[in-house]
Image (cartoon, rainbow, N blue to C red; front, side, top):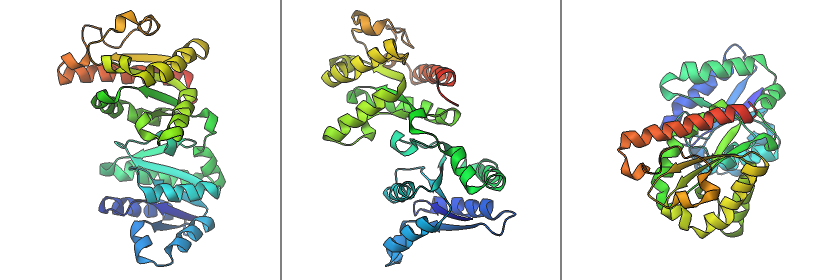
Length: 295
């Protein structure tokens, strides 16, 4: 079995490459792994042909998606086009955009505990299954992937970033991924991606503020779809009051009880108190996800 490993050309991935080789070669000399990264591309004048050939001729792809690296994403695209089995791995604190994970689970590892969190799990997976079984065990039908859609005003981006810190690790517990509009493209493509994410949304987290309520795009495009989905499809709405606003006069919205009281917006709280409400939102997200999303 030939395995092709893709990772960015950075020193922190050298140890990951070694761990992959250790897991792949353990107890099975017929397995081999080829590591490829950006350094190979620049040093090898025929690299454009060679790495595509490597992917075409391999049995399985392992790709580290700990960061949005253009080379890694390009390689994954080639692997998908050639219908190769793909295992995605990432460091436990990584932010993984929806467009990367759609169709796949991600195996999260800890750089301080590679033996336990990466090497041993891969040994087990690769030794107990055939290549096809391995690919099928981590591949999901696109329609099964559901979205935790985060709706927010760009003026409140700081709160969105803190929320992601809390909910991103939850992806390992179920077949879902978060989506925010800063992971999309521009123009018509941007709108189409938002529409697709809204359609897949099983959970929506709204970061409420005066900026949020004043956003024409949110009010005219995102909210109507989410509210209709909540009524017709059972999309679960979680609201967090991030700044003082007229939330109480929006009857369509205030029927969903906020994580924090209206008189205690996050902007008025200490950092620690704000973090506790983010934890509360993350716990509710996980609780709902376990009930309504495929595991």
